[in-house]
Length: 100
Image (cartoon, rainbow, N blue to C red):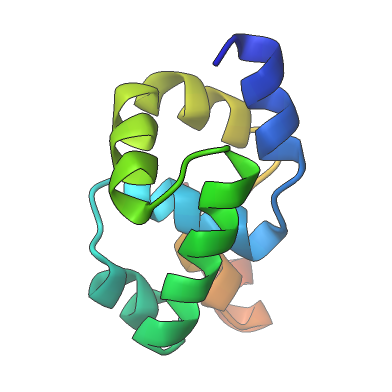
């Protein structure tokens, strides 16, 4: 997949899917992602299936390999549009007191 196709695929992701892609690339399992995003494992599996379709990768194994092989490119493309996944779960007072 060239950079233009990758950028298009990333743009087509929902904010939740972008967070999940980020967490997969950072080495989190489905169970860990579910815990971090306060979702069920089944919900994360469904998101992963949708992500696989958007990246034109059949099966979660192929998706995982693709994401890991393209880790640096994906993280660069996600960086300007997606806050770190854990911030999505903060309330406003936690967010206000957080410093990078």
